[in-house]
Amino acid sequence: MIRPPAVAGRFYPDDPERLRADVDSFLAGGANENKISVRACLVPHAGYMYSGAVAGEVYRRIEIPGRVILLGPRHFPHGAPLAILSEGSWQTPLGMARIDRPLAENILRAFPVLREDAVAHSTEHSLEVQIPFLQRLVPAFAFVPIVIGPAQWDVLEALGHALASVIAAEREPVLLIASSDMNHYERDAVTRVKDRKAIDQFLALDARKLFDTVRNERISMCGYAAAVAVLIAARELGATGAELVRYATSGEVNGDMEEVVGYAGMVVI
Image 1 (cartoon, rainbow, N blue to C red):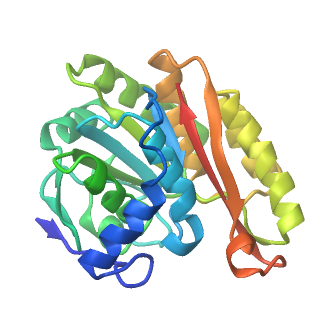
Image 2 (cartoon, rainbow, N blue to C red):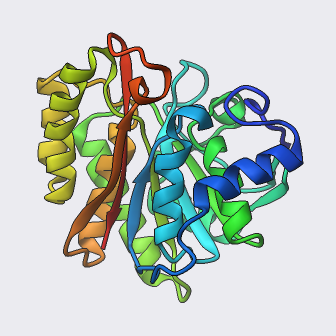
């Protein structure tokens, strides 16, 4: 199975040379930085003009192994609410990115609630926009895509434990990447306050409080479920801390401070 790009030409350039140049510009400036080893990270997934700099700063700071698990929201009500793909490749203007079939099959065995479902992935952008960054940094990487629709705490907790058990049994390192934007379409000042509440829980590695804070404070963090599952897995794997790498809002790009989207880049160590 080959999944063609769904948002090339909209969220990021569909011309390979321009895409390569854009991604490289977001990754620039880290040549002399010492890359850090992390268990997980959170990166945004808006159009590159808005969130590419935040995502790029995270990616350029960390060591990225050859195997990655990508988790993000299912924005549209199509397909299974917990959907994985276990074979094939995803195409971007930069070429093919291969799905890690053995790793995906291990995850399916550990958490059979997941469903093999191409429909849920076919038009979803939250994972797709991460692929060109990974292709530029680790051209031969392999990945497992998982999208999450509406989910309760106990389901996310079980998914996090399953991911941790699978990663712990692997001989090679596996990076967990949660894809999420932060609060949506409120004033810049309001969004910054709301986002800080969610960010603080992520930095405290407190998945339960992140889950409750997003819901109780009405923070429209689209990928909070992915972030919760990743935090649970990272904690079980021995994570001891987290860091906010960069935060921004769309208002800093387009000047509209009345309806912004927040973007946070964070790492779990």
